[in-house]
Amino acid sequence: MKNIAVYTLTSSLHDAAAIEASSQDFLKEVFPDGGFDYKGTDYSDFGQHVLDLIYVRTGGTEGEFLKLLPKLHGVSHFYLLTSGKSNSLAASMEILSYLNQNGMSGEILHGAGLDEKVRAIAAARRASRSLRGLRLGVLGRPSDWLISSAADYARVKAALGIELLDIPMEEVKAAIEAAPEGGAESQAFDLVAQRADKVCAAIPGALRIHRGLEQIVRDLGLGGFTLRCFDLLTAFGNTGCLSLARFNAAGIPAACEGDVPALLSMAIARAVTGSTGFMANPSRMDPAAGKIVFAHCTVPFDMVDSAALDTHFESGIGVGIKGHIPSAPATILKVSGDLSRVFIAEGTIVRNLSEPDLCRTQIELCLDDPSLVGSYFLTAPIGNHHIIIPGRHGATLRVFQKLILTFGHES
Image (cartoon, rainbow, N blue to C red; front, side, top):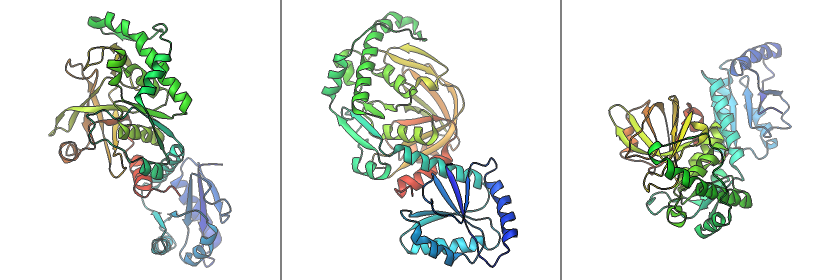
C-alpha cells in the first residue's frame, strides 16, 4: 500500500472517456514520479493511507459527496483535489463550505505547485503518525535559568500524542553511578591541543555518563530526552555533551539543560524532515544583515564533517564538542511548551567560528529574511534555545504547524 491514495468524484452528465483522459494528464502533473494509488470510486479503504485525496473531477458532484459522507467514518479533515476544469473548483468550494458549516474541515488543493504541496502534506501527516506514542524523558527538571521554558504536558499529549515523563535527577545520578566507566574507547576526534591532557582524562567519565543514560533510555523505552546536564558538573565533575552528541546522531533526540520545548522541537524536526537538529542559543546578531551567531557545547555527530573534543565552555571541565558544520542552507525551528507558538525560518550557514568566549561549536547563519532579527529574536523570542536543521524544510514544517499544532488533528 502506498502512502497517498486518490479517490474520484465525477458527475454522470460529463463524458466519461474525456474526463478520464483529462484526469490522467492532470494526475501526471501532480505526481510526476507516480507514487500514489488510484482508487477511483472505490472508497472502501478511505482514511487508511497517510494521505487520502478526493479528486473532484467535475461540477455537479456535491450531492454525490453528501451520499458518500456517512461512509467515511473517523475522518474530519478532507483534502479536495481540483484541476480547474469542468467546474471542479466550484464544486469543491461548495463541498468545503458544507464541511465548515457542519463542524468539519478541509482544504482545496488547487493551482500551481500542487506536487510540492501534496508532498508536504503527506510528510507532515507521516510525521504526526510517527510521533504518536513517543515517550520523551525529562531527566531532572529544567535548569533554573529557563524561566520561560515550561511545557504543557496535557496539551503535548493531546496535540502530538507524545508522553512526557519526569525522571528525578536522583535516579539519573544513580544510573550513571551504576554504569561501568571502562576505557576511553577509540574515537576519531582531534583534541584541542592546549587542553589535550585534560580532555583525555575526562573521556572515560563522559562515556560512563553515556552508558548510564543509555540504561535509562532502554529501561523506560524513551524515544528521546532532555537532561538537566549542569547538575553533572558538581555530581561527577563531567558533562553530558559527548553523550548527547552520540544520542542525536543515533536518531534519538537529546536536548540540554532540561529544556522541554527544545526537545519537542528536536523531535518534531526529526519526524518531519528526517534530519537531526543542532540545539544552540543565539550569541550575537547583526540586525541589518540578518546574521546570527549560534553556539553550544554539543552538536550531533552526524551534522558535522569534523569534530574536536574540548572542555565544556562555562565550567572548563569535562568533554565538550567543537564541531564543524558544513556551510549550506538550513532551517530554524522552535515550538513553545504549550504549542501555541511556532517559529520557522530559513537561511544559510555561512561559516564556522572559533571564538574563545563562546560555547565550543559556533556557526554564523544568515537569515533569508533579515527583518526576523528585529521582529522575532529581539522582540518576541520563544526562549533562547533554537534548533538548526540542515536543508530547507520551511514549507513542510509550516504544513505540520497548521495541520497538527494549530488544529490538533491528522485525519
